[in-house]
Length: 170
Image (tube, rainbow, N blue to C red; front, side, top):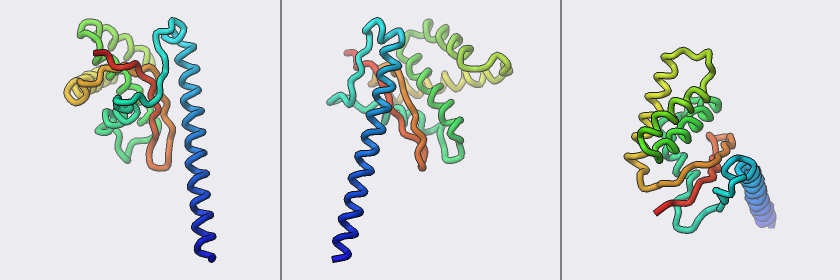
């Protein structure tokens, strides 16, 4: 009888943990939706958030795979956040034509890094972005969805990603 009681308690705890995770996930998506709606794309009604589109890959999983070679056990949460922000920028740049890409990359890099950063560091970042653009085109070229917003949630084993993106274009 004690074994059944213990298993029942463990099962109840498992269900409660699952419900808690779902509530947290819903809260994160609501905050993302608010940020998107308050931003320029939301105000112009150019973006509607849709979760887990049938037949579409989950962009959170895609972004995780895209970043995976650059995030290791030895990177810190701050480094992970920076890497994901650079990866998102590179992902979106890979979806626009090359001339616009170069100009947008320069502008984005200047916005992302402090003005006190050495010019060599900006060159290294530019190379990283170019490498990520090439990675996107080589391994993820079939996915043509822009990443509109994302959220990172630190976990015991790394981080979870929540991603809002545009729909695929034919």
